[in-house]
Amino acid sequence: MATAIHRSGDAGVVCGAEPLLSATLRRAGIPVHRAVLRVGDPPAGAVPVRGWSATASHGGEPSVVFAAAVRCTRSGGSRAGEVVRSVVTRWAATTGPREVLLAEPRSFCAGVERAIEAVRRSLSTVDGPVFVRKQVVHNSHVVHELEALGAVFVEELDDVPEGATVVFSAHGVSPAVRAQAAEQHLDVIDATCPLVSKVHAEALRFTGRGDTVVFIGHAGHEETEGTMGHAPERMRLVGSVDDVANLDVPDPERVSYLSQTTLAVDETRDIVAALRHRFPALRGPKSDDICYATTNRQHALHAIAAEADLVLVLGSPNSSNSVRLVELSRRLGTPAHLIDDLGDIRPEWVADARRVGLTAGASAPPQLVTDVLSALRGLGPLQTTTHRVATETVTFAVPQKAQRR
Ligand code: 0CG
Ligand code: SF4
Image (cartoon, rainbow, N blue to C red; front, side):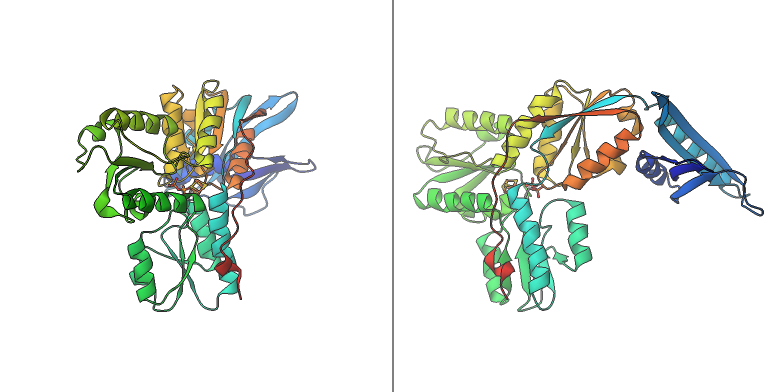
């Protein structure tokens, strides 16, 4: 795939959409080599190639360019050629002017910044390996980047050697995990988000006064496991309004609720209403457990979804708050897709989408948004408008133990 095209003597044109086409080719099983394409007389002995390109001009300048060349060999070259021709044709059909409606706030929250920084600092201050229990935040790019810096990710503390340093993820852990860490004499750096720790404290307080605590959350999510692990015998999990009818509690007069921090605001409100209907004496937290970052990202999506033909949400599939954004957009009537990065974008999604809503979950790095914007710019003139619903000023100090030594 050409990353830029140069004709002898001209300044050349950058192929901004190249990563989109390259990813589509890789998905089709075609190995991709990226290079600047120099157009002119081939040097003597050059390997013959077949090429396909698309160019469209807006305002006299070629604003959309991409080109691919396939090496002509007796074996395989023609199948690759067919795939490349089809991929170039499909992406060529998506070119044209577009507007991106950029939701703000989006991307990293204070808890994620703190957790990533806790691992980074530990890597530079700790002698010996730094283990991280579970994905420190639910994003593949963040995990790979920290792995490349030397962090060792493990699923359970059983995989951490006695006395080593371990970072707990932003999603928090149960007291049982803390006890195991103590037994193994581990040096713990706790990157649990303070807003998750607040829910842990509420779980202890509410169960301590004799209540059964209904926890609204998703089964199997680390935050659910960590929070419910604080009083497993006195807590019940519900994930939907339907679950409320099946609840079995010892005393309906003594019921409280708590929730995961990254749920959908509207769905959680419905579940709380159903709980209150069933348990009129229901008590809850003073302030919402759904955190400011989750709430803001959902409000910002509200501001753009109705205007957009398509919404793209940057985030990994195991990121609860990111998946909630996709579901919310669909509930609001706008098709939406979760993308780990720009390589997941399909030509058929964007072909007829002239107004694209773009946002990112709280664990998705901001650079991914920049990458998507520059790739979309490679498909034609791009106007970007930002829709800000809140300004986030929250910051959390990095755990002291990550800074010491
Ligand atoms: O949204 P969840 O709880 O899955 O977490 P993620 O790591 O994606 O982002 C915020 C945190 C922690
Ligand atoms: Fe903390 Fe909310 Fe970010 Fe989770 S999404 S890490 S609770 S600020």
